[in-house]
Image 1 (cartoon, rainbow, N blue to C red):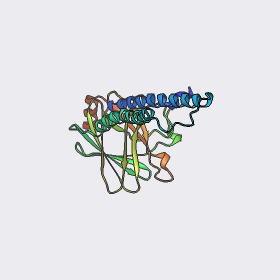
Image 2: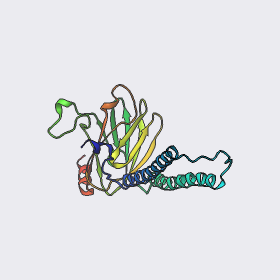
Image 3: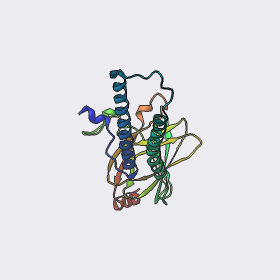
Image 4: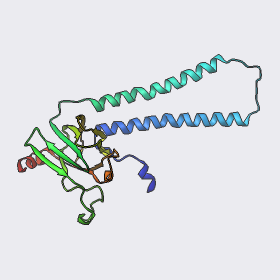
Length: 225
C-alpha cells in the first residue's frame, strides 16, 4: 500500500527504536496542538461574543505562556536523552572505516586483518533475481550482530553521508576530517542505504549494503580473508 511508504523502515537497532519512539511521541503532541488550534479557530469564527472594553486577561496570558513552555519541555527532554544515547560510545569491539569517493565507498577493517574493499553499485544488467536496482553493490560490508561497532567516516573528494535508515545511523563523510558513529545491530539480515548528501552527478549511484551475520560466521569470514 502506498501509505506504507510514509512510514519508517522496521528498526533493527536500539538507536532506531529510540528514534521511532521519539518520533511517535512528538507526533502525538503535534496532533494535540493542531486539534486545539482548529477548535479555537472554529470557536472564534462561530460565536458572536465580543468584549470591546477588555484590555487584559492575566489568567489566559499565563496559560498561553506556560502551556507552550511545558510542551517544549515534553519534547526537549526525550530528545536530549535520545541524542546522548546515539552519541555514547561503549568500548566498541569492531572498528570500520568508510571512505567516500566519487562515486563509491571503500571500507577498511583496520583493527583486524587489514581487510580493504571498494564497493561499487552493481549495474542493472548484472542484477540477479530478487536483487534491488540502485541498492545492490558488488562488495558489501560484513558485520556481526549483537556487537558494539564503531564506524569512522571520511572522504577523499567532496562531502558524502553514510546512511543506513533501518539502523538509525547517518554520518557525514567530510574530506580532511574523521567522524565517528556507533552501531549495535540487534538482528541479522541485509541492510541497504545510500549516500544522503548531494555529492555530484552520480550521487544516486553509490549505495551502501551491509550483510549482518552471527559472530561465528563473521570470524570464519575474517579467517578466509
